Image: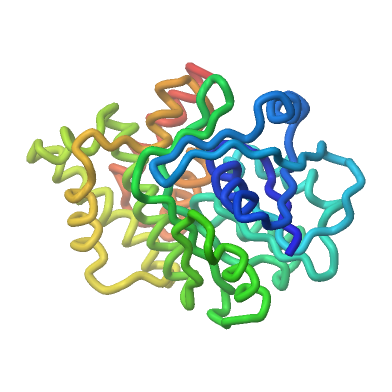
Length: 305
């Protein structure tokens, strides 16, 4: 299969790089500065799962390259519109788009642009970053990618994607219920990013305070109530499960959104928490903690961006 990876950053660069390491047919759609950097240094991955330096095939937006079988989309939500425009020339009749963004809103936008049949579900669990030299630094055991048809079907195309990852240094899983996986991840990431940015602290110090743990529980309950109102697929007793998951995290674990704030980078406030609040307002659901989370993020944007 021909893979087009949009960007060669911390996420796309890692998963695309692992496919390339396995000698799959991978091309990276990058900006001019990143293209020059990769030509000079190669695609460098430093990981507890194995270090590697690769010589990737790269293109700039608009370059002639034909259509691709799979487009791996792992941009931040605030870059989605630009990414959609840049991949249009490479989408053919049989192209499948595999997005790894957090949340749900991006799937609606991709379907609107490219049609139901081209979009499958995807998400990832990975803690990775791009350092100042452009190296991809990955330091945790988790480096997992989950994907599947939104219908739950085990189609030929998702089986082919599974085959492509088979034997690579990636934890991958072909899901039979990707919608459930997506909403579970959305619940986790909106809670984790919301509380750590609001408190300006890792999850451990928040949970060890009785008042902090109570606020986390309230935020979980508010988000679950929103998701239940629109009949999002969630397991029973998800509130208890999620709190246990939070308590099992490393003491100094931060959300990627918190790390972005510490670097004065853009955040996905509208895409994650704003989308949920829009539903809460339309359904007249009271969500005081989520309101505070979103207000905090919007104040940050106003002051820093």
